[in-house]
Image 1 (cartoon, rainbow, N blue to C red):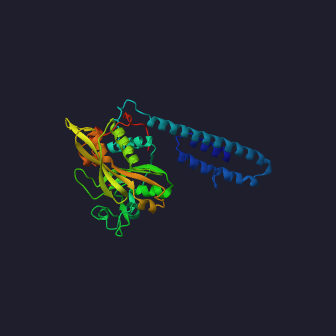
Image 2: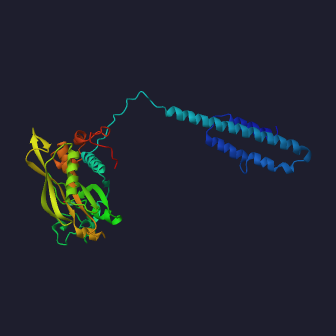
Image 3: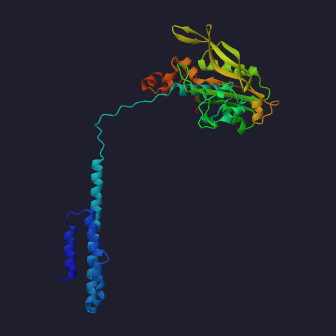
Length: 355
Ligand code: PHE
């Protein structure tokens, strides 16, 4: 038997066995590699007498094609086999029972922030945001707070460095400064967000929420402030009439300043807003101090306005009958399930403002 035939028979035999991809690669290199049997046979061509050379070359080529073809078929078969095992293993067993779906709820504070934003957006306020980590300048100095003011005290403020330059903002008022520095008057914004003070008891948490309001334009007066807050409180609590009381107060960044109480009464253990003779403080406000306007390069003879800061958690407690502030931040799943809001259940006064 000629060498060519021998090689051919040997390898056809090998290729008819049960092979994996490594076996096939091995065969390929034995035949077609640098020193493979077929490659070597081609190298002998020149030493073959010329009358036999043509036949030898043609036999060699035929064998090469035949074995190559056989190898290709084998590889194809292996691929199909692999796909089939994969399909078999990845089959979905539809007889398995489904997993429980745990539906999340919207936290009352998030809900109330959305409601507040929605009410204010109806009367032309846009929503701004500022960082929780604030600098001393925006939180205090630019807001006309004197160096010796008690609010700057370590006991009240969480400072983040020894130089007392960085802190966790103690109120949302620095967003007033940030807003006025980056634009030109008029301004009509609210800024909801987290605020921090070193305080903790049944009605105070070290982290709480405020919404700042700022309206600066020509000829804005305290009547506008009263009208705006009156509209807000009625809309937010969904009542036609409310009792509202402005008490003189002091903030370094407003003059005059006031605190606002709303009237309520307890009926069957429930808080009813707008009736009765009890008062509850819900916000601080006033006319923006001329020094604050000067600090952000606004001429106080040309522009005036009002600002307010509302305690969001308080409003949420009042509106939804929650009596312990600390529960808001305990992340108790059962509590959230009870007091939280279904994301698909839209309350009647919610007009769909996306934050
Ligand atoms: N920043 C004040 C506070 O946290 C509230 C306030 C805001 C008062 C704006 C006046 C104007 O108590």
